[in-house]
Length: 445
Image 1 (tube, rainbow, N blue to C red):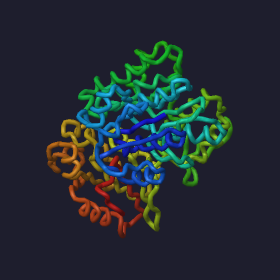
Image 2: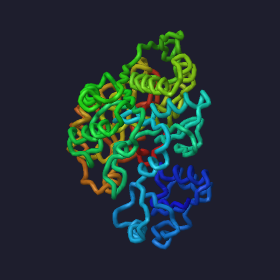
Image 3: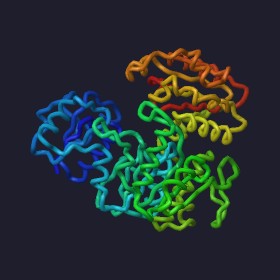
Image 4: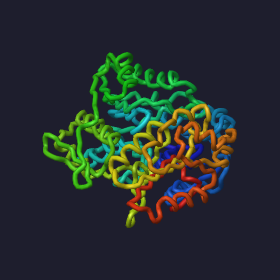
């Protein structure tokens, strides 16, 4: 099998390329820019393109297919050449389905918690020696890649509602047709693609309507929009609701009271316990009993950039999190506040996505950072320029967050000074929380 990747440097694209290379496929690829970790990962496998750019002569009739990455444009010369030759052009999710169509497909969908829930399921299945494939949006401890494609009978898929590619505007989740699905929650996101909340919700309605009758739907019964959607669109599905389990904090650990006895976890936060319940219900459907699930989940430490501890020193503990939507910000701050009630909570949030940098959406963030003792919002002119978006007024950003004490920064050095001022010589221990789907322009602590 010979496949060519257009935009091979993408976070998931390069992982799929490596997974298929390890499967024995002949893989080539192109991109106009490839940064680490993708660059190093591809180079180690002998898959790094010799030169950056697009080269139509790489596209020949000898290819069995072309996989098109999300950041490739419609006028990409390699894409045009593939279309001229009549080659099969797959979007990323379209190819994943092609590789998984004969497997039992488990899809984790929803606006938040997808990566963590997927990672939990992967962790438990591995602990029990199950053979499975997977696709997950972050590095998970114990797994070399974030994609595996083999002859395993089951595949666990993190399902994204963002469009599949420049020539395929359907959300990725519409391709997967799961036998078992999780719906974690619905909170408006991706406003550049879905201009209204109703339009956004409709993508999940279509997803449920497309599931085979009798398929299992594990859903968050504490989310009103999810419940309403399930009742309206999921009548022919097997309903498996879940809620946040009862827990307590004991000796600096979250402890669950279960039929198997007390279970101490390494994760914290109500939203993560919701994710754990979803994972437990899925694992039940895959043949794992509760007692076995709980024994395994005690060893789960989290996925990369999901409340990931990045620093611990005397008087300071620091976490980073992928939170970028309003509901994710609120949930993450609430979790950290509950976990460290005696600490000074210093929180920094970077506006980095199209939605968060869109002034018409910024009002959705009102009061989302109220739980912190000192809060800052950061955005850069560079990020706005890359996305072709107009400038933002820092004062208006502050007003949208509806928090008078909030500081707004456009320069990472100024932000770093503010962090130092709020973490050095504090009169009590400090918990620093960095929230972004970006990197704060490469700022280091």
